[in-house]
Length: 298
Image (tube, rainbow, N blue to C red; front, side, top):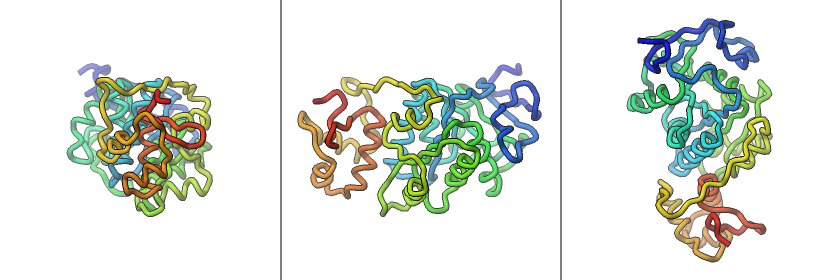
């Protein structure tokens, strides 16, 4: 098997040609990396999208749309291939035809979690999978916080979409802050366990992410100036039924989020999270005064 095929496992010692310079910012860089895939070395323009494994449907929709928009803008999406937010971000990037990088807490030839075999191979085909652990290494709880420092180091910014109070994604955010990377978080309901961590990050100084422009402003080095995707015609609808319900309420006249909350019977905080997902996906836009309209609407 040739060294250019995505199935080939390659070892890269620290300091060898192709070694990511960003890893030298770590207090304890890995001694070596193992990788599979075509994307090497990792581009500088990369953003980590991480979050809860037990994510909400709205949270996964936000992560998927963010992955799509970043990939469409030429930014590499980095995550950990875990269930929930990580997998959604990888899938969004792949759907946009962009490469994505997965950093594992096991060997690159070990699929974890089970059920992600196809996703793992898709990431290898379009991007790369890396680990500091040699092939055959089985996952262990202590390996995941350790690998999170690699995710943070390889990205210019870390976006936490959803996180509980003890989510491993918070350790990625801490590593990013220690390294001087920008940390952003998607705000959520104060009543949602999956948003307690992200809301606290924002309280402690993380940049609230409501739309891609927030990331573009926070990290100008990314060069983000992506066109807003236009939905309609044969474009896919949101996967989450709650998002589709909101979209159906928006006709020719813009509505305030409070009106949408009243019409759906949902809490205002829940509506705010769903509108964030819709705006990231390009389905809606916010007008002056806070009213919401369909993208391209008046």
